[in-house]
Image (tube, rainbow over all chains, first blue to last red; front, top):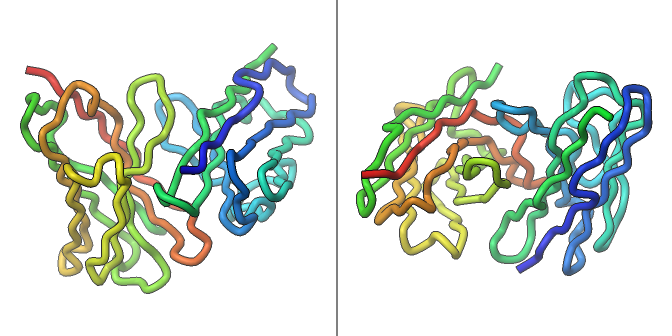
Length: 109
Length: 120
């Protein structure tokens, strides 16, 4: 089973600042199969990034993804007030087919 | 615009079967490009994939739940369903249905989620 670890657990930043979130896999993950989601309280997750670096439809270009192998990064270039949320990475591959990381909470400093 | 909506009981007794249905609107469940999946989230915790189904009926389950899970599809109603048997308090969670891209393996459309509590 591929285990995803996300760091930091919580990131406290101010609007306008840059956010860098890490997702590390216990084994190599195909870049084609690494996605990022944003979840706000009381809402379903929203797809942000797929294929490690492709933005989903309607996602602003301040969100970007990068990485390969076991280390992946989600970057928010300049935080907007609506960006504060919990972010999850997700991989597809070995059994179980889909696993999610534990999440990184980005809150307002 | 594709929408997914979960429905089913919000309260299930221990040892009984949890049954939920996801209704797909604004698009066909018979698309060859997508699977249809269930994901759950216990209160205050992270996301756990339960399983997927293709419109043909092919299923893929999380091994940790496989012995208790059945996912089925009804293309005539544009719906797919989740049955989880022998539930315990540990199955208390928000249950989401989602569309899963068959090639790139991401979940791009989600239902709003439905809270299911297991309690006597």
